[in-house]
Amino acid sequence: MLHSVPPPANVLDALGDAPSRVVYLSTTSVYGSARLVHENTPVDPTSERARLRLAEEQRVAAGPWSSLILRPAAIYGPGRGIHERVLRGEPCEIGDNFISRIHVDDLATHVEAGLLSDVTGAYPVADEEPCTSREIVEFCASKLSVQLRQAKAFDNTRTNRRVDGSAIRRLLGITLQYPSYKVGIPASLGRHTL
Image 1: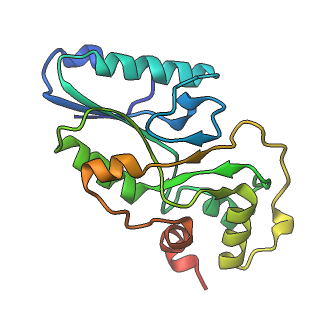
Image 2: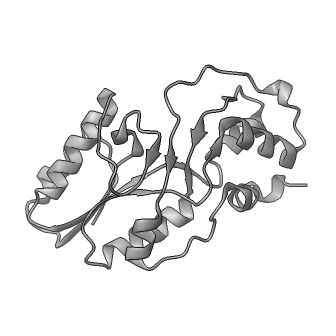
């Protein structure tokens, strides 16, 4: 079973001991202020959202089933992500803070492989190219021929994290379809690219 419902929903109580395998989609926010994240980075939740997610992770891991916890970085894809905000002319965070991402199709590949594997534990999930919020907004604006005056500078201190998701890819034997936002964003934009 894939469990992706954020807490405080009580999904696990309804399961009993029915599934033999649970893959839970958590978040990289459980790493708190860690700037470099990999499979051995300790958790340090600093927000209530992150604490709730970590508590749900612990409930999943303690269940009577085999479990795998995936902690995806920022998820993007068609209709979802910074490129959509740039397309709509909404204010976007522009700064030198690093953000990691994962295309929704690649996340689905992780989930499918995870459900069919016997890999256990908790792992971060991200593509191979973290970048600054400035870099991705400029990239999207260029692809969409949008002037950056539509975007706005933010003092973004809440996220500055580079995530290495290579360990779980190796364990699951998968290859990313979109290893970088530079291929994932154009694929997500589809008809909007010039």
